[in-house]
Length: 204
Image (cartoon, rainbow, N blue to C red; front, side, top):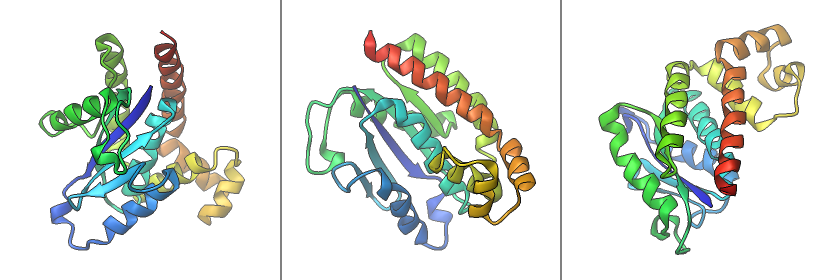
């Protein structure tokens, strides 16, 4: 089983500067090599393969946090399944993970949802998407400071609040406030639940 995130930048046409394309490439580059593992195409669309599907949700949250920290955002669909064809470019690879991601992505605009997932297991998908939609009630409105905190905290999971504060240039009390405001503990609990559910799905 693999996972594929398909996304686009929201209101990219309204965005005066085009620097977010470079920003997006910077955000995606630690994930792997382009264009085999990720690709930005048609200006504002992107696709990424997350080979360990258990990491897919947190990767999507990380991309969202990075984008919110530069006053942008993305719509993303996560598809799970197999990969039957590996091409040099991810946009030309194929399999059920790609189909699930692509088909779901087409419906996001109509649903006015910025993040959803599809495994093909209807009961699982309904349950997880409901939880994600509840989380989006605050993730979609992260302000720059909250988003910056979330991105740094995800990238440095072993650091204490004090150490995160040193990276962000703020004291530990301010880190604690940002953590609360971003509902970060809730996001991490959701990620833990998601990981256990995907593990079971892989095993079944």
